[in-house]
Image (cartoon, rainbow, N blue to C red):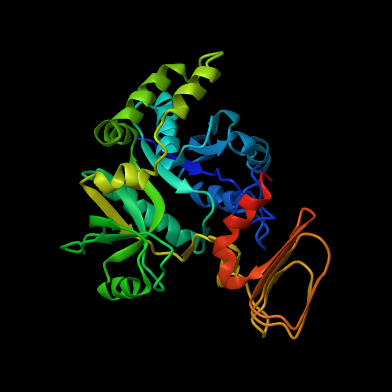
Length: 348
């Protein structure tokens, strides 16, 4: 059974404004690295899944940048969502495309915008998941928590018996408060939900039938329209009727027989500008800078410039970004609220 990978790369470009936009969201910008996050994701997986079996799920606005940055991916492997409807609709739509290529295959679903070190350990973790899929409904890749993070969802799993590698999943839990997050770390069997999943395409569609029957009915209407000339308006109409819900809430939290593989690699979802200091080097005053920056009496700041010099004097714990003729300045601890500003500014 061939393994295919689907890399989810849409987004509205809100959390990394002004460097990111609707047409060029986070997976396609260079955050202080020589390559973009989506380019890194593709190259990390290629030793396991060849380029011909890697599919890229994008929105219509990202077609140009995706094809430009990923010339190794066949043009027919870019799956363009007619409209954004969250991850359940995206992955259901991708499953229909994959079954056209191979009627019964395994599907590895990967976000395009995560920062991952240790590529060999990453592939080792994925291989353990592939080996564990037999007899499981789906495999989830969990991240052992390194801090009491309140911004992530968690997965509780049972330690395997007899030296096995796959942990039976007990439940998904929502973003906890700080005290609960501390308890999760001490318990040793709670993992950050990485958003990386593995299942058979046929199993995923069956899960839709059981847990999201209305969406399943819409997917069955879409199935004969894929590849049909002139079907785009009807595809848009049907796809727009799919329920807007994540794959976690809509299906996985209700499913049984799930298994979890703990990650063996360093991972960060880089949720906002403040995350840059977790993986980029800092100067002796704790400033993390990408692009030209002159700090004077400046501490703990995150500076990103795609243009000219940014000078700072007598400031502390700020995020300062200059890109596309726009400037962002905010306290570092307010970087999670950036969506409010982007909403007030209107479409980018």
